Image (tube, rainbow, N blue to C red; front, side, top):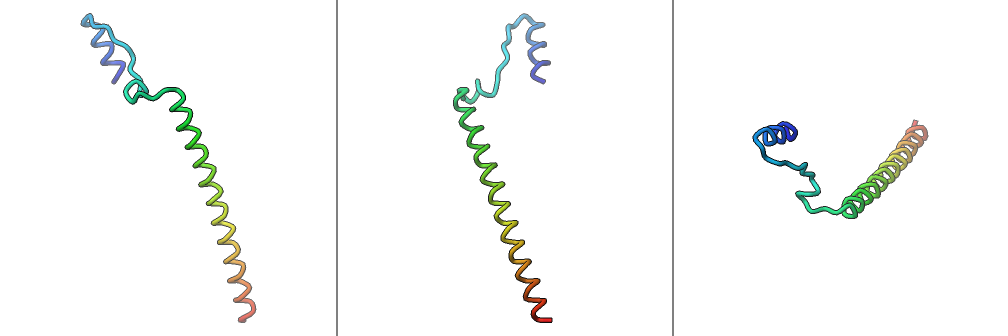
Length: 72
């Protein structure tokens, strides 16, 4: 759509430039890099939390099985 709008404007004699999201938000490359680093750090933290939950679930399942074996 953006390309079509620029082509239509150019055909009627208007000059157009490509507008990026950073143009609209005012983000600098440093802002974008910081946001990406924060997202990467959050993804690592989420993965570690998921692994910890799995270890806890495995431990509970093991204890449950041990109790069931003792009870039978």
